[in-house]
Each structure stands twice: as structure tokens, then as C-alpha cells.
Image (cartoon, rainbow, N blue to C red; front, side, top):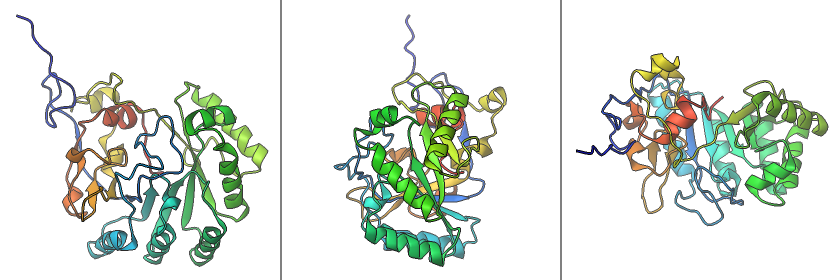
Length: 310
């Protein structure tokens, strides 16, 4: 009799072969992420969260959505030092400057993932005021998908290169801390990629070390339809990977799904829509372990070594 193989990534406890699925325990909430909304001024070719000018599946956050979590961190003595903001493009959110200022006033460092294309004069003024009031507390991580304009624009669309370059140069000229996020989707060797970015930074006069994994983060590609092995409890030893190094061992992400009255805490920045990774409404709710029941868990984090935090 023919045996039908069970589908992968369906059972949070068991793999398709019936083996115990690996999970990751939250060891230390180092970074709390907020997705400020999925709207973006670009529609990228391979956006993991499908951001676009029309996508509002995650609605804009306001200060009132963010501040309770900052208060919970302090009241429960969580070790969180860094607050991350992602999107969409965070600076499309009309309340983003207010959210940033509130977060900084609570004493946190902030990391903003941005395409650096939205720094209008009014926003520039607010950012400069915050930089002066909270020195060395703001880091902007700029998405430069490839060091060549042609491949960057292949991913992000025609005309997306020069405004990004101008935004990055404005940040650098005004003394902001900058990181860069690149992608490996074109199959370049890592050495070649870092050498290419090194040349780009030198041409632009940007003081970044392309060989420093904090200054230049290279993200593996994510494709939910690609064949990916499931991660079992035995894989940690087989692969020589420490579960404590996984993103969900040290971070969570707050979102507001369209139609919801309240925010939710998701296990991961990569899985904003999948309700099996919705851990509740508070950080206390979200303190449990996370089964690695999604292709992104395997491809991006375990096998790809990716992490959205430094």
C-alpha cells in the first residue's frame, strides 16, 4: 500500500517524519521590535512581508500602542536595552517621530530599519533634535540590497537608488550612527559582496567597515515555497547550532493587525501574519518557547544564520 507523506510544517510538535520538532526558549529579551505598519513607498520584488503602498495588513502604530510595552519592560525589570522599528517603511507612519522620541525618553536605544528615502525637511529637523537630546542612542539601518545600482533597483524598482544614497549621505554628514542591510539573493560569494560594499562606502565617503557584521548585515533569501528541511531537536548538535543564538531566543515583535482593537506580540519579525506565532497581548504572554514550525525558521535563522538584531 502506498504511504502518503505528511506535509511539512503543519504540526508544532512533530515534523512530517514524526520526529520531535525543535523549539526555542526566550532566554533574554534583548530587542523588542515594533512593526510600525506594512505600508511602504516601494513594492520590492521579494519583500518577505509584502510591503507596498497599498498593503495595510499591519496598520500604523501610535504612541499609545508602543508606550505600554516600554512601561512593562521597566515594571517587570526585563533586560531589554534596544527597541527596533521596522515596516513597511517606518517613516511613512505619520507618528513615527513621536514614537521615536517617546522611546528615547524612556531611556532605550533605538534601531530603525529604513530605505532612507523619506527624510523630508520637517522630519530631518525632528531627527536632528533627537540626536542632540539623545546622543549615540539612534542607529539607522539602511537597506541597500546590492552594492550595484542595477541589482539594487532590480529588487526595489527603478529610481530607488539615488534617493537612498542621498538619504544615507545626509545621515552620515549629520553624524548619525548607520548600519547597512544587504541581501544574498544573487548568489555572490560573501567575500565578493563585502568587497563590493567596501568600495561603495569608500566612493561615498561613508565611514563604515564592510567586513564588520554589525555594520553590514547580509540577509539570506526567504522563499516559503522552496524545499527546506524541518529542524528537529537533534539538529542542534548535528548542525553545531546553539538555539540561544536564534532570533526568537532574544526578541519579539509588536504588531497591530488590521481590524484588531489591540496590538499583538509575535514571535518573530519575519512572521507577522501567521497566527500560530501570535503569542498574546503582553510581553508576559509572549515569554514562552517557540516551535520552529515555518520554513523561515529553518532557512533564515537556523541554516542561514540570519538575525534582525545586531
